[in-house]
Length: 328
Length: 160
Image (tube, rainbow over the protein chains, first blue to last red):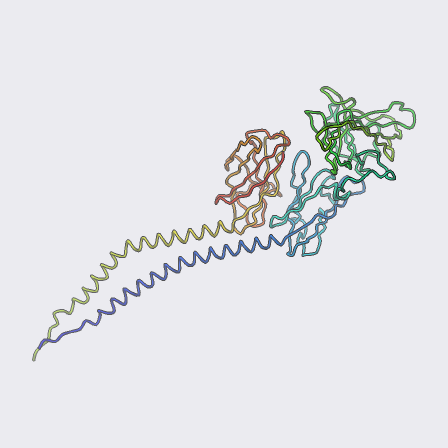
């Protein structure tokens, strides 16, 4: 009788092969799933960032000026959102450029808790920037949320809807003068602002300061836009003699093509005067007196009203300064 | 006394070896295919994850009338480190669009002004295009777009 021997390894080969396939399949699945779960976690993370960003809200509420109102000494920012924020950038935009003023988190704790505020000051008493009423300040958080406002509006208050003229108030006409923003700066004979000089408060000026430009700030409180032309001027009249002559500085037009400056209704703008005669090619800047004196100041504006129906009507206005400037 | 000799004693070993050999040979293309697929799929998810967490915002743009250069401030608000790869500037009035590659702009840290190529979450990058190839017209609106290497970007409208 022949003995039939059973192969004891028959099943184990199948088991090994199956186990091998199973391990391979599961490892492949694991790799696939780990990639997918990683992606899912990334999506959740991004959704969390977006949710946090949606909860952010900041408002620029206050600017501090130095005694002469020439520099911004501090900014106050309120966190009106529901999450902690960190201020990471300050920008200033004026008519010629947008500049990065710095990252407050590099020199101070720039975190703000919800319903709290932060006063941003430069270290060692240095200033944030020069005060320019028509320039726009922008603050940005780490998550990219922004707040911005015009420096003049933060200082002087928001623009109000045009009101009927109030005869008890001291203004005559549609341009309201901002008395606290009045400056001068040295220029060349050709009217180029001296980069080594800066805007000084205009109430006192040193005699023989040379060619100067004057900078005043106004708000158009009319309900119509206004365009002023190159004949608009800034005149000083001495109270005593000498000097006996009055001096006039004419407008430096913002629009060098039409030689005009546009003043939108409700907006605060600054106006610069430089020229000894209404600007044209080859004109020279105007100089200040070489002797000490006290002067009255008169602002005269000429231009156009832009009526609602598209027509333009003539506009003229004179503003006598409440205070005089002194040449010392 | 009868001695039993199992003439099939070695065949199960051979059978198992042959089977393993056949399985292995057959599995090679499947292995290659599945590995490639897995790696490809995994890298796809990883890339998608990176793109999903990549986010930039243009905070400010300095582009004024009469100038032929432009400064763009870009902040990384995503989880992924980013590298700016492309900048586009379009003139809304004329419809002209200009593209600038990495060789045509400089990227710097706006605080230190040191050159930097990539920024992490929360950091700010100054992108300076020295020569736009045109002079901006005062009062005209321009659209500035910035894109990262992975194609994530942001758009900003600026009046020169």
